[in-house]
Image 1 (cartoon, one colour):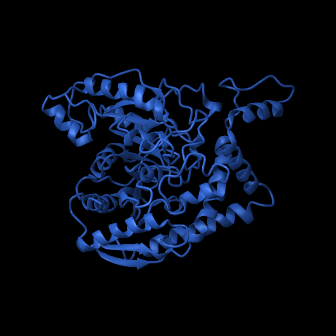
Image 2 (cartoon, rainbow, N blue to C red):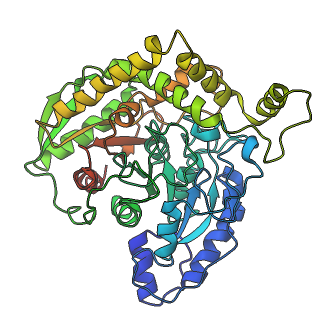
Image 3 (cartoon, helix red, strand yellow):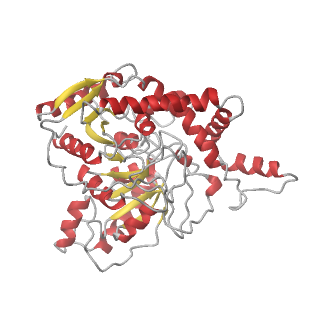
Amino acid sequence: MRATGYTIGSLRKAFAKKEVSAAEIYDAYAKRIGGEGKKLNAFLSVSDGFVPYERESSPLAGVPYAAKDNMLVAGGVSTAGSRILEKYVASYDATVIARLRAADAQLLGKTNMDEFAMGSSGENSAYGPVRNPLDTSRVPGGSSAGSAAAVAADLCVFSLGSDTGGSIRQPASLCGIVGLKPTYGRVSRHGLIALASSLDQIGPLTKTVRDAAEVMNVISGEDAMDATSAPVPVADHTETLDAGVAGMKIGVPKEYFGRGLSEEVDERVRAAIDGLSNAGADIVEVSLPHTPYALAVYYIVLPSEASANLARFDGIRYGLSKKADAILDVYTSSRAKGFGPEPARRILLGTYALSAGYFDAYYLQAQRVRALVRKDFDDAFRSVDVIVGPTSPTTAFKLGERTADPLAMYLSDVYTVPVNLAGVPAISVPCGNGAASGLPVGFQVIGPMFGEQKVLQVASAVERLGL
């Protein structure tokens, strides 16, 4: 019996042939989490065990998966990687968890993450850093660090992450797997512990593009519990996977190939673009002129929204508060103990940007420039089907290498944050290993609003190049 190493498709075939049972697969992966998973610090909690089911109608029935620890699971602890929520037990399922439960997918456990999804390396968790399974001296990327490491290390068949500025795509790139950030509103955020409500989106991390499409078929769609979920019909995401790219117009932004992009990443991404050209795509240079401002805009919008969202956490209900003479002293002591350095930094930045006398100069101006970033994408998609480029400017860096320099860490997201500001879908798919580091390079495919099918179609073509 082959115990692990499955994709969704190969596991479904094994079930059909009675080569292995769903319970046996679950136990095999649970055992790996207790072994390899501990070395990587990929999981924060594990589920109670296999949940028996009768029907086999769902493509995900019996498939073991993991979920980032900012998604609520009824009866389970959801910490969002923070001490201030270490005793929080959810009373209901996030919509994505409920939909996967209805499809009989099997939840193995909750994965480690940068605290409140604030980070690009997986080092900001209150419960210790996550390690990259390809080289444990390096970061897996963040903030969906444990979710990416779990898939790359075959601790689960697929996982869920959240992406606020690249937190699915960047760790997928650094771990050599597939990570899809859907259109804002395509997947319900109900039951997701919010970081920045206008940017957050849940999506899959998988071993193949087809697996990402299969998961999207289950978790996508309007949700009455999320007012920001879009009332847009959901097509079968697997329909066009094998259609190829012949005749498609693929845009390459000149702004994505300049200063800061490592030579080995540039080389692999250009090789993938050449491969798409040889497969019949029409490669067109495009311009996204406000790209240089996107990172600055993001680091005003995100901290501002985080400051508002995290204000609800005072430590009182979950046992972090201490006795004090005044309510301000309660807040000060509990939050100083409960929030780590990165959340504290961003809360301070956001509170400052929203404060009287600075709101117009910072937050309001950032929203104006955000509209220009969105317009850049709208204009480009009038002439091309998708936009492609690097996911991350470098391959996985060493643990501790950028922790003393927040700006260097923030620059890891330079190619991913514009997508969140615009609300469009994007995927990272591996395009080979860098010549210098020998580590995976991610290729990013960006599509128009609700253009997940096109994004997956091009990503599948990149996957077939075998780079």
